[in-house]
Length: 166
Length: 110
Image (tube, rainbow over all chains, first blue to last red):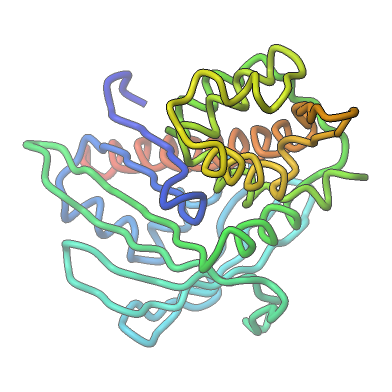
């Protein structure tokens, strides 16, 4: 990553949303394509060392992306994004969801709405993603599911954390 | 383990307010009575007590009455759970976007 590419990760809307700003050193059309075409999403969406594998992609309002993230030891996590609105190449909104291999949504988990916007910044592109949860309680359910046992964090970064939340 | 029941979402809600953040920072240095906590703020006591109530509901702080004095303490597990989740999520997005930088460089070069 180029050192001066803007990256901000914030808790917003009184704990009901995450807002992520990130600049990319490429034109808006290319950055848009990377977010909306399965063969490109498969090359970047999962954080390392996981990989992404698309099972189904229909990028249009009412369509959805169904994909798996695979761990190196063969574990598979299925998700889908249901596209609601699409305005090429300015932005789109989508509902996330945890699923099984068939694509059936896990009804016990709250779904977040993602609002993804693409803006020209001279020769670069700024992508802003806002992940909206219906309530702080919904966010709590998602966090509880992902929470692993055994807290290793310390209080040392309290000030840094509070600063980011502000 | 207690972390499963810690209301991290509510912790973020609680920390969204500058008064409540200041109270958490103060309690990071050690226990304090309600009047000690309220002292730096130019705020009516009922309003301040509402802030404390939000903090208690999120399990960020706990209070105890000794005689006529109520003392508050930070619940570090709640704060650590929130911090850990936040740090993990941030790492996921950072890592994912670093991948995208690489892909964009490759595609731009073609």
